[in-house]
Length: 155
Image 1 (cartoon, rainbow, N blue to C red):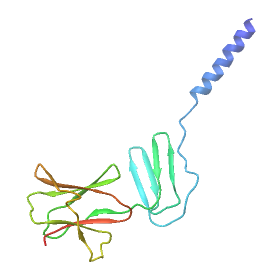
Image 2 (image 1 turned 30 degrees about the vertical axis):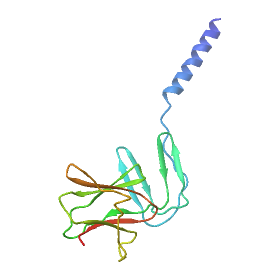
Image 3 (image 1 turned 135 degrees about the vertical axis):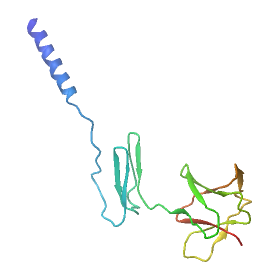
Image 4 (image 1 turned 180 degrees about the horizontal axis):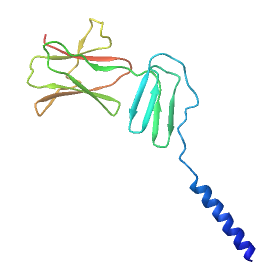
């Protein structure tokens, strides 16, 4: 009887010792693609390094983290000389909210898929109305694939 109690206590001590030696797992991406470009993003104790344009990368997820690879389009506000400052923010990954001072009258919001193009078109304000709040104009537009550039012009 004493021997079985001693054996039980020994087993419990061994399991407790193993549990105390357990450490958190490290993150590992055991595959990679050699390509040009890319960069590093750091926040808190995490760092992610990547390469622009990995259409075959797919989506990696584990726990509360998700990393999506592939080409990401550029969504940018182009500052035009003499025009009010144009700001852009993305919301929910599906919309872009552009804003500028409502005191700047006569300016039209235009968009194009290329900075070198001369085919800038006015944003349809019937479909995407300009909302004014606290002295600021706001327009919410859907984000489509590829590059999207926006600017303000005074015709």
